[in-house]
Each structure stands twice: as structure tokens, then as C-alpha cells.
Amino acid sequence: MLSAAAALPLAAAGCQGLRVLGTPPRPLPDVTVLRAAMDSETLLIAQYTAVLAAQPGLAGLLDPLLGQHRAHLDRLRARLIVPPGAATPSPSPRPHVQAPPGPTAAQAFLQQAEAGAAQALTGRLAAASPSLAQLLASIAAAEASHALLLSPRRGAR
Amino acid sequence: MTASPAPGAAARRVRAATIHALQTALAAEHTAVYGYAVAGAHLTGSRQQAATRGWIAHQQARDALTAMVAALGAQPVPASATYQLPFGVRGPQSAVALLALLEDGLATTYLGVVALSSDRLRLFGARGVQTAALRATGWRGSTPAFPGLQPAGG
Image 1 (cartoon, helix red, strand yellow):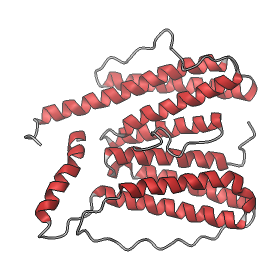
Image 2 (cartoon, helix red, strand yellow; image 1 turned 180 degrees about the vertical axis):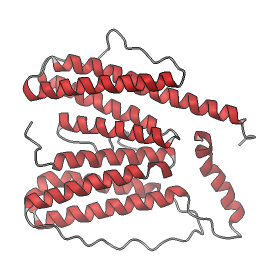
Image 3 (cartoon, helix red, strand yellow; image 1 turned 90 degrees about the horizontal axis):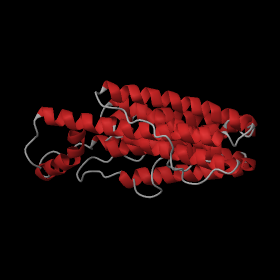
Image 4 (spheres, rainbow over the protein chains, first blue to last red; image 1 turned 90 degrees about the vertical axis):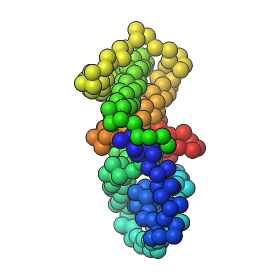
């Protein structure tokens, strides 16, 4: 299974050459997983941006975390290799986010968003190639850590 | 690519990769059990309590991995009597730094389990990465963008 998975890109690349004159190749499984993970990061970035616009006092806490989501998105995008000829779905619309009023509610809103994103990424591991699964697991761990840093009891230690 | 190997050879490779990844995680858990005991002795109050909880949790993880390796018919790597720590622990500051560093290492070794093909082991590995990242964040008060991965590449 591991060797089969490792051989997949090679086999797909070989097929691609043969299929250039035929039907366009379907996106590799990783492309689907990558797009879902990128959509999730894009949503988180929009959520942080909305909260920061409404609650500038949270910038000290939120700016470093937002920067890490931008790094996640960059790293995911760098892996997105769409086979030539494959149908490219139109980019997801920019998500519109309304930040809840008040810093406490806004922070709790982001904490929940981080925890949800970590769980969703973990659920996509099975569909990913080994190296993408590692990247997703690492990003999910960062998001779970963000949720910890956003928890109201932080600093009590 | 050469001709497809016999199914038996592929299964053996998967088993060897699984054992290797689990043994690596087990060795890291042995190190963590040792490191938490060393560091915990330099901590007080709530940080000492957190270190004790971590010490117990790492013993449980060690036992779980020992059972998993044994279930695959391999000899689980034993604990060493002592470990070479990356730096000497002289007080609470270096104790906390050591614990954060140990958890960083665990995140990396559990990422090795995530690369396996079994869905169940991937999930187990991902939980290990997450637990290590959370503990590292608890000790350090911050997280890297990519726990367990090198800053560039990956």
C-alpha cells in the first residue's frame, strides 16, 4: 500500500502523457484534499481579519496566529499541481465573515473555528498521500495549539 | 519502474515500515519519560503538577506503543538506563525548555507514523502529533506554524 501510494504520482504522470489526446485527466486525489484544506485556511484568515478589524486590542494575541495561517495557505498552495488539461474549478468566493461583538465572544469564536478546522483536517488524512498527510497533521496540530492559546484560561498557569 | 513485486514482499515492506515508525516513536517516548522525570525535579507548583501529568501520560504512551510493536511480532526497543539530554537542566527555565524540546521531537516522530498507509495508524499518529504540539505550546506559550516539520520544505 505504501509502495502503491508512492508510485501513484509516477503512474499518474505516465498516464497523463498517454491521455493528452484523449479525455482530460481527473485531478489527483491530493488536489481535492488540498483545495479543501486551502478553503479552510482562507476561511480562517477571513475570520481573523474580521475579528481584528472589530477588535484591534486583540492584535497582540491574534497577529502571530494569523501569520501562521498565511504560512499554511502558502505551503498548501505550493503543493497544488493541477494536471494540464484538467478542469480548474473557479476559485472559491471570498468568504464573508461577521465577527461577534465584544473581545471575549470574538476570541471564543476564533477558538471554536481553530478547533473545528483541526478536526476537519484530521478527517482528511486518509484521502491524502503520505507526505500531504504529514503536512495536514502538522497544520492540524498548529490549529489545535492556536485553540489552546485562544482559550480564556490561558495565562492562569 | 520494474515489475510489480510479489504481494508477500509488499506486505513485508509495509510491516517493516510500520514497525520502524512505531519503534522510533517508542524510543522518543522512553526519552520523554526520562526527561520529564529530570525536568520535573526542577519545577514547583502548577508547573511541577503539569510535568507529573506529562510524565504519567508519556509512560502510558510508551506502554501503548510497546504493545503495538509486540503485536506486530517485533521486540519493542527497551529504555536506556540514562539518556544524553541536549543540555543540562540547572533550574526551572532550562527544565521547561527541555520539556518543550522533547515535545517538539515527539511531534516529529509521530509524523513518521502519519506517513504510514493504514488509516487507523495515521489517525493514531496525528493524535500523537497534536498531543505533543499542545504540550509544547503549554510549556513554551507559543507554537511553530508547522509542528514536527522542518521550517522549510516538507
